[in-house]
Length: 218
Image (tube, rainbow, N blue to C red; front, side):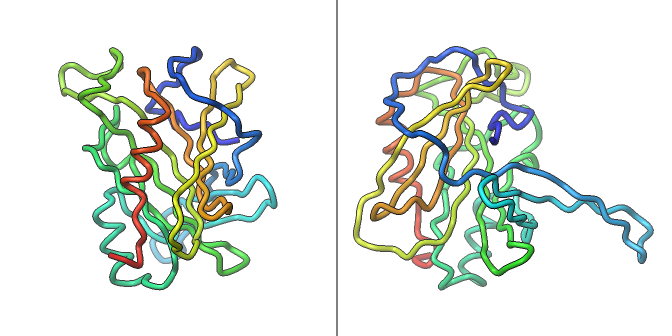
């Protein structure tokens, strides 16, 4: 299963939040991978970024290359109206130990089909919630929580989002936490998160309700 530390965000081995975990498993479950291909024209080796579906082994290949939500939303508005995707807006300034290029907001296309997948990865800092001492004091970089979203298309209906929180423990003791997100009883997104401070369940739910926006409404 996916580890949402992703190299630049350290996962805690101890629980620091008060959350009601009821989910049995992450419903949308992908693992990152990559392939290398020689470009005969340039003579260089190209890296192809992939996500593999844990449930059916389908492979999704990167179709866009954005590291800002604003670029994603503009692309969707100009090129993808009618695809029925919710986009996850950050809602806060993005932070991370590495450059903002480590964040991504990209569509992936099924290699042997037509299905699209939206993958978003970013970290934010909330001044009220704060952070631990992971921040780089010299640069002012701090992290409250990091996210990885996998989102599939779903038609918009007049219904409230429902959330199902879950967690599982890796062999090395690291705890992976996630949220299955439902609309009309159908799970269309799974959010993996790594928090560095005590964050109540209500904060996550309000954050998701506020910042999940329907792309076709842009």
